Image (cartoon, rainbow, N blue to C red):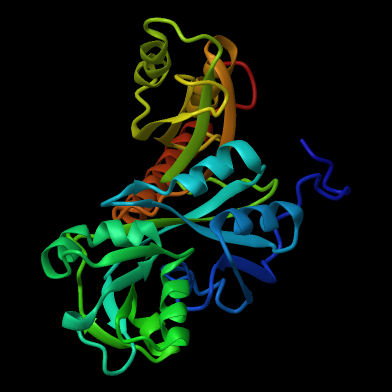
Length: 325
């Protein structure tokens, strides 16, 4: 236990002064970031790519990084997962999930019939694949670093034959007209974002998620099953399991896992210990509050159970006598 007279070796994380996010202004990342009341008061720093955001966070150029990590239609944002796995040492502090509405936008006077090219980040283009095939067959697509960059490029070019895919915020910022609304292929389109910073693990809330990467020591029959059995034996629920190439050799993969619980929970710590000891190298990406819809109710239930347990234990302790019976 720390001496209360001495400063804690792990002081509380200070509020971020500079928050890096995928720019330019008007991205879905900025839209998600602005749902966080404690972050919008910081200096928001737009950066060119998600890898740039994560690298700037690791070096201290910004205090907190905010990036997209997963979409309900297109799955994992690989550049984010790969940079977290292989290139930087930062920890996830929270996750934020927002609904995503994709709009087709062009300069004033542009029409859908007159379009020849659509510019956007590939993840957004893929989310509207059906619309593009149905309404704009033969129209070419061009990649941008973000939806907002695509909108900015369209505005700067002033070409009515070129459109962008993005949100209403970007259309407003760059003076574009919305030519078609809600063009995503699935109406329940959501994107998950994470905030990261170095060296800090948020305290447990009672409804948390832990993210790790497991690199096997040896690829042998049953090795993945052996890893999964560590979770099953402890009744730990996995919310995500994905393989990614290690970039070392063809066929060499690591596993990205999200699991319910916090590293402060004994059962989670025991599981991570077993994985590190018996199965491979574990990279810890963070334990943080879950953004699942039931999270507030689950946290309240845990808090109430803890209060009831405290009262139960306190009642038992009142029965302890001062001396032998």
